[in-house]
Length: 157
Image 1 (cartoon, helix red, strand yellow):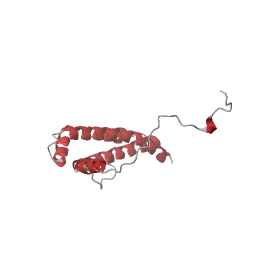
Image 2 (cartoon, helix red, strand yellow):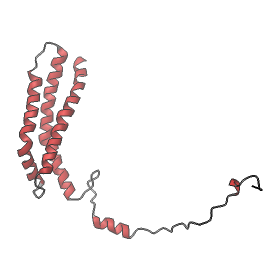
Image 3 (cartoon, helix red, strand yellow):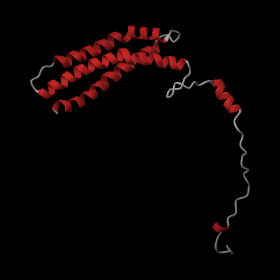
Image 4 (tube, helix red, strand yellow):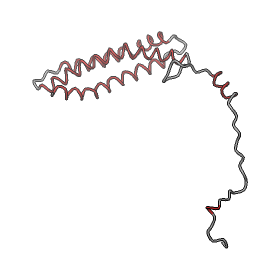
């Protein structure tokens, strides 16, 4: 039970390490020459930031794995954190990097974010605007509407 409770704290460490690496990779990917193929851009980005991501994850892994306490809760926490930091590193260099490239392909194909099966084309959007069904605009009278229910009960005023 104690090991289960300490594992919940590891999530916050993983968020910090994982999001930091994601921002670093994505920023380097966006700074690389836009004319290159997305896969080549990822290679260039990893040439620049790959060592930093590796060293950050490696030092975190070694720091957590190198701690040997006799207190069971700290031992479980450090072991879990070390394994999780290694898993996040593998996730960043494989799955996240592939998603960055796929997202760039999606952007170049002008597909929607949420549902990438539907293309967005400027010509289709313009044709929709030009062929929109015109609805009759209601005429606005200059006179104020008269409502008997809203009129004053006193006729003389």
